[in-house]
Image (cartoon, rainbow, N blue to C red; front, top):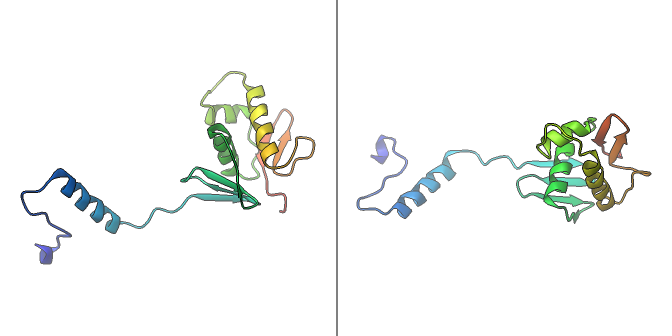
Length: 138
């Protein structure tokens, strides 16, 4: 059987656990490793798979929503995103007025990145237009 092209075989009787282990082994061998999804914007490094973010080499202590917001902006570096888009994509609310909620979360993110709305480095806001994440060194 193996000479005919089979990758593996299981001798009867077998348990479900044994079969599952064999299937996992075949799957590990069958395809390329999935690409690690890491986004870097300046000194911000976001590992989407591990759900971790680092700033200047130090871990950022982010809530789940802060992580989602930062990731959403980092996936669109330099792109102005409206609060309505953020509300729809991060909060999953296609309508409604939660601008203040977004402002509060942006404020918390800014604080964790060592900046303020008055002196932004990474998170830039244009009143009435939206917000964007930028690399301050570029």
